[in-house]
Image (cartoon, rainbow, N blue to C red):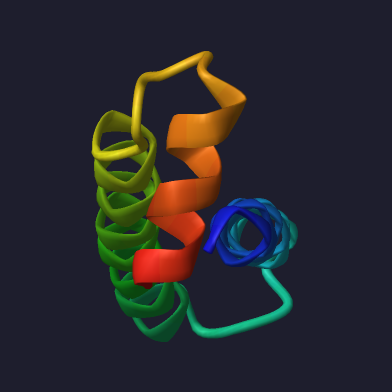
Length: 70
């Protein structure tokens, strides 16, 4: 998900360049930019939630138990 979030941000960058260069219809470009921004927010939220829900233990034995339970 982290990679997908980075790719979405890069896509957003290129869409803004296309819009600013006048290569595409401004109205269509703006809709694509807004859609990419929504995706970025969703993916960022997923990544953040994943990091927040990670087990917070430094005990290797406990980590092994968590891995075997999944």
